Amino acid sequence: MTPTKTLCIAITLLCSVAASGQNDPAAKAILDKVSAKFKTLITVQANYNLNVTNRAGKNAGKKNGSIMLKGQKYKITDKSMEITSDGRKIWKFEPSANEVTISNVDNNAGGITPQKLFTNFYDKDFTYKLKGTAKVGTRTLSEIELTPVDKTKNFQKVLVYVDQVQQMIVSSKIFENSGNVYDYSISNLKTNAPLADNLFTFDKTKYAGVDEIIQ
Image 1: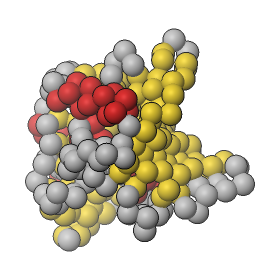
Image 2: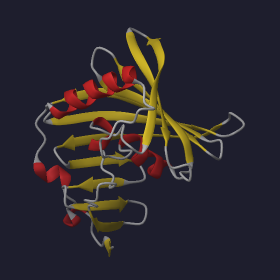
Image 3: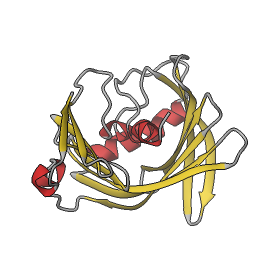
């Protein structure tokens, strides 16, 4: 699984609310608050950091970038890739190749969008439980473990950490079946700052000779 793919999981997961009897009510109460809080926000901006460790526990890579959300629009940016969506189309731009891949947003129930990490990602496709709390600096975080119901997924579980005061997810860990662990953290979180709609479309006039691939 590539870092870009795991970022989509970490910032998106899946959607369709349907709590199971196997799920932990304490975890659900926390996740419900995250979902309710996010639904009140007009925009979200944050930086993210990724650290990858392999089965042997050795560092296998690092990555950092930024994310912006506005309604169903989003933009994820790092040095190797820029993913932009206006809610209808998705543009994946690779600067090294000067190439942009254009596709339509998947509106099916199982479709992936970054907004779904914050709203109802804890769904019928996962079971979840509260593992406990941890003190990180001045913050108290709730640790929640999500396990995919579909055992054919190429990851075993996801841990999410919720700031108890902000009621927002601030970090997550994805545990691949291969033994790799993808550790994401969010910093410099800003909410409700003005973001122009044109930030969420790809302007090819800024990239001379860019190749367009339509999917």
